[in-house]
Length: 219
Image (tube, rainbow, N blue to C red; front, side):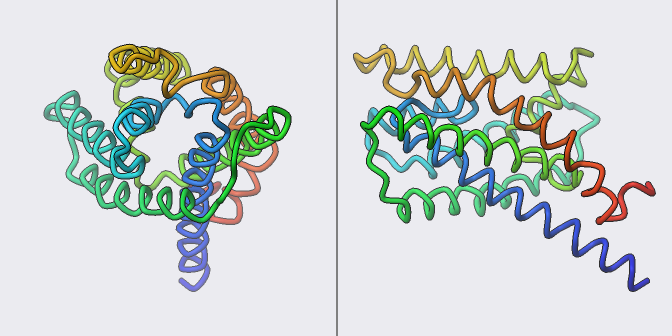
């Protein structure tokens, strides 16, 4: 029993660490001045256009993702999915915390690119850790997973399509405010490719040991 409790603590610990790293990675991506990561490009674009809080807008979008999941799943919906909303509240508070605590000023391209690489690594590792623990999904992952299940398409393909959709909406919003690239840029495109590679690399190097530490390799 003690071993099981230790596994549970480890599992939740890695999950929470993954969420913190994910929030940090997404925030650092916006700090580069090269555009936001695709999954949060819509709230970031609106934030840039209006001055409204980026974390709060991300919370609104994440709640919309959860609502969309419920609609798409129909009779297969599970009330545990509602836990994605309080998760999103905590997650976006971390984003606001990091945004205020990191006084980085962009404009130096080599430094911006270096920060972007760090942001992509944090985002990929954080996403990989949270997904591997199989607890409450991040709404961005949850909606993509739901679409993949309903369409029968591969998860990575659905993720790519969803990211393209988010970027397209962001471009339209930016155009409406007079700046097509208001919330997206080179960093957005690089992160669309780089985050997936970071996830694959982390899973290759660390997923098996992670599952062993949490006891999930025995499931």
